[in-house]
Amino acid sequence: MRTRQILCPTDFSETASHALRYAIEMANFYHVGLRIVHVIEQPIGVDNYQMLVVTPEELAQSMEDSAAENMRALLAELKSELSVESVIRHGSATEQILKEAEVSEAGMIVIASHGRTGLAHFLHTNVAESVANRAECPVLVVK
Image (cartoon, helix red, strand yellow):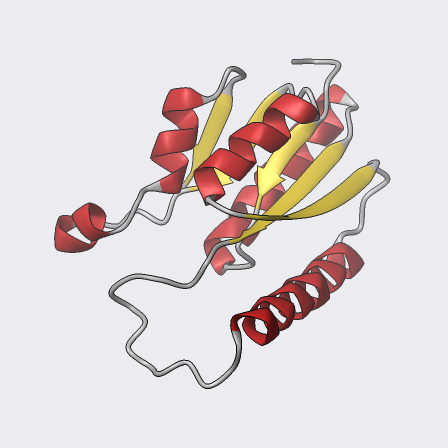
């Protein structure tokens, strides 16, 4: 853990930014690199009531462009001497985060918990909980 980079998934939310601050602090403490990953998931589920007026290819390209712009902005805000890498993946957030941790041989994952409760907890997959349960490296879940 002390010699391998830290993986920090982000969805560019305020909670994810809070987790990123922890990841930066841990990376500085252990003098390791930081790898930031964003996963673009297929937009499905109960929150999507609007009609699709673009092709799936146009939607995918728009999501990719938006994620790339958000990642550039995030990296521009970082004021650190750390070695920072960024990755954008497509697919299931949990699966892609775990795959990135394995491929990059991450020493730790620092991930935000959105803390859904009640019905929302049952309707949406809790990515942080799933990653924490299945990861082979230590996971720090930040509220």
